[in-house]
Image (tube, rainbow, N blue to C red; front, side, top):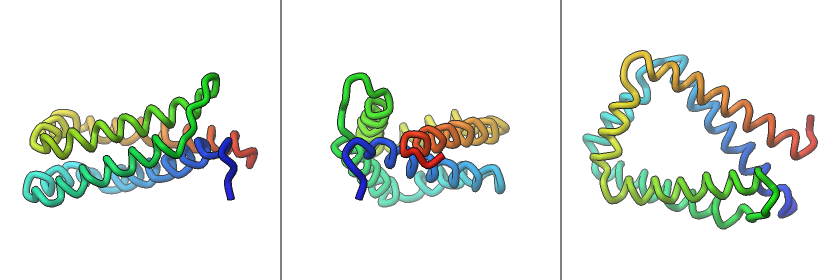
Amino acid sequence: MASTADTPAWIALFLGLYMLAVCVAELRAPGGWARLLDDFERSPALSFLTGAFTFTLGAAIYLASPWRPGDWLSIFISVIGGLAVAKGLFFLAAPDRVTALGRRVLTGDKTTFIAGLDAMLAAALIFVALSRLQTI
């Protein structure tokens, strides 16, 4: 069982692994993220479930990660949880706006660039988490 002090590192590790897998999928078969936006536009139920899941996961991350002043990782993870809560609420309240924003961001070659940048951020998050957990 992880100690409370390790909770932000464990969350960072699993978040980094998730991000890396999603980015690799997009880099292997570009256009997957755009097809996800198509699905959101066609299915209000999918948009609702995505918003509810994002809200719930963000709340769990925010509540599980202790806020310790001076510990930048715990602060960062708490902020990520809070942003996920806000994103979930935004997705529930205005899914059409979220999809429109996604369309503007994920067009053409920008998707590959964003996936590559996110993959590097995910790798950094994994490295930080593993360093904090003293596994490397």
